[in-house]
Every structure is written in C-alpha cells, then in structure tokens.
Image 1 (spheres, rainbow, N blue to C red):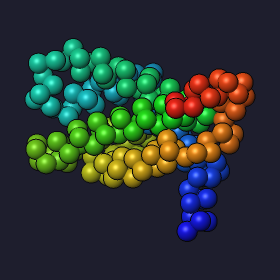
Image 2 (cartoon, one colour):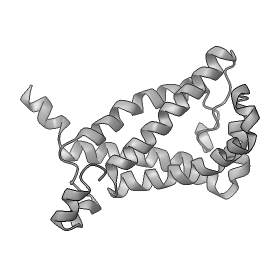
Image 3 (cartoon, rainbow, N blue to C red):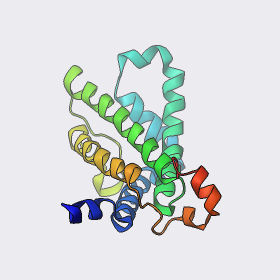
Length: 170
C-alpha cells in the first residue's frame, strides 16, 4: 500500500499526466484557432440547447473563448505553470462538457459528432468524447492533489517564498 501511495504522489506520474492531458487539450484546441467561428462557435450552436437560445450572444462569446482558454490551460499543464489552476480550469470545462453532452444524449435523444477534435478524430461522437471527459476528471484530480508537483515544472524556478505563496494554484 505504501508503494501505491508513493507512486500516486510521485512527481513523475504527475508529469506524465500533465503532459498527456496537456497534449490532448492542445490537439483539440489549437486547430480551432485559425477559424474559431466555424470550428468552435458553430459546434456550440449545433448542440441546440434551448436554455441557451435566449442568450445567443453569450453562446457566441463562450464559443470564441473556449479554444483560447483551452490552449492556455493545456500550455499551463505542459510547462508546469500554475498546474493546479490549469488542472482545475480544465476539470471545470470537462464537467461543463459532460453536462452538455448528457443533455444532448438523454434529453434531446441525439447522438451527433462532438466537433471536439480535428483530423482523424473529427468524427468522434458525443458518447465517445463523454467517456474521454469522464476518464480525464480523476487524472486532473491527481494533478491537483499531488504533493510533489515540482518535477519538471517552471514553478520550481521561482524563489522559495513565491513557491510558498502560490502553492495552492501552482
């Protein structure tokens, strides 16, 4: 049991999870940046949420913000900058994605493409990406709760007093 605890608190495990999730996020978000209107805003509108219709201008704003925010969070995880905050941010977005996808599947009764990933993964359905989001949540929790997160992180370069002050978000 001690070896399992040591492994779960290992900086190396946290590093691997940070890089895997960060690369996944960047793979999903970076290709959307050249045409955010088509690849993000349109995708959000395609989900046809009746409770978002009165606030369509907000839906548009969210569609524009998501790829940029996701890119920042992915870069934060990969570089080790504000890792807890980045993991929390993506975890929050994943929970929102889960709720939206569950609404499409169970309330609207539709199975449609997710429009989450580009290239060969472009045709993944909401049911498939729902599984990815659910699997990602405990991995993000490990990143947020790990005691040793300083392994290969830019936060380790900060002075000790700054590391102490930023310990809850870095």
